[in-house]
Length: 268
Ligand SMILES: NC(=O)C1=CN([C@@H]2O[C@H](COP(=O)(O)OP(=O)(O)OC[C@H]3O[C@@H](n4cnc5c(N)ncnc54)[C@H](OP(=O)(O)O)[C@@H]3O)[C@@H](O)[C@H]2O)C=CC1
Ligand SMILES: O=C(O)[C@@H]1CCC=N1
Image (cartoon, rainbow, N blue to C red; front, side, top):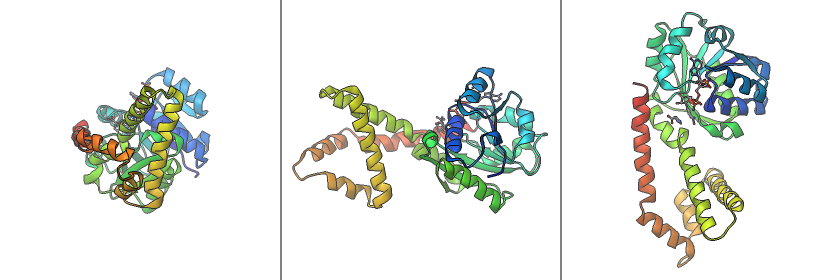
């Protein structure tokens, strides 16, 4: 793709997307420009990815076709105020922050701007990201298709209605954190039984990866896949019975409700 892509903010999420994007070869390295608050981050990112860096958000904003705002939600008004007079009317703004709405960004710019609101996740680094996107009316089909190609280069993406965007962190933006917690717990349980720590992480992580692939590739209901593992009177159903007793599923659903409420509040 022969477009320039900029990232204002180059922390964990931006670096995950940049790592995946470069790995995919969709964009040449010299078409990616990033800015950050500290020179330390810029030096690190330049050394890691061999991309252009600038410690000037305004200059960056004038140079790119697609501009990711990859800072924390509370910084959005400040950053937009800084760049609003510098972006051209063909620049597409891409937000990645929880709770930041299309309307809020439009208001901060105080003029008509093309905006795509997204919620990515950090597995983008290994090109297994999952992102959700919505956009305002003035984004054209070809711009949307290019941005979807960018997100698909480091994983998969879905277009959703904006009224669902606050629910996306809970299911895919934040959920890698819950899965890491589960992998850590699985490994601890294995270590408790005497399995060496390194083997325990490999066994647990590969089992999670395989289970996720089974859901995606067989398209069987997760309940049916679970039933296939549970031998009647066997060991797995013992574990399932204990998980149900301990509120495994209801704790996840309750955690997701809290995540959604907090995501919505982060933009206010
Ligand atoms: N982490 C995740 O899993 C996900 C995060 N997000 C969203 O991504 C956004 C960023 O999160 P994350 O990457 O985790 O946060 P980080 O703290 O890792 O990164 C924030 C970046 O913003 C930079 N920054 C701060 N102030 C400025 C400024 N004035 N000008 C330019 N850059 C600045 C920081 O620079 P410096 O490095 O120099 O401090 C840093 O590189 C958030 O809005 C979050 O909601 C969305 C989905 C998943
Ligand atoms: O924790 C957060 O607020 C962000 C949103 C999704 C993942 N991290």
